[in-house]
Length: 162
Ligand code: HEM
Image: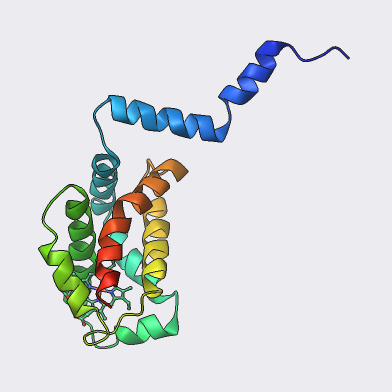
């Protein structure tokens, strides 16, 4: 058994997930697309899927009985307002829009209002990402990271009002 050629070692390094991830990010940056742009495009693909919001709602309320309980008096239209509007405000904030709407959401979701526990936002994100994985044909784990990175500042802002 001879020693593996240097080229093989090099290939192993070049194929490491971390390096591929960094390289993908680099390409995206070079093409002028930010994470927020890429996530916005993914959101567009999800939106064109007829059952995206129903699936998200089902995934989210399935995470905990306490969450399902919060929506017992919510009708379908309001559900859509929350899901559609919610994602839209988080993404537009990431694209540099004003934070006024998120401040408002922070207040409506705070303990004096809807009383949404801070830990529930993690379940919201998990449910959303499961749904994106199901509906975006271009879903990758890198895209998953990008979604989470892009939404985090907006979610932190909402939570900070609790
Ligand atoms: C970052 C995550 C979230 C966003 C962007 C968001 C966004 C929204 C929006 C836009 C509304 C519509 C009413 C309003 O303007 O206040 C709403 C309502 C609501 N949200 Fe959220 N939300 C989030 C997380 C959560 C979580 C984790 C829960 C936990 C149960 C929750 C429960 C509710 C409830 C109960 C309503 C009222 C529904 C009704 O009208 O009956 N939200 N949310």
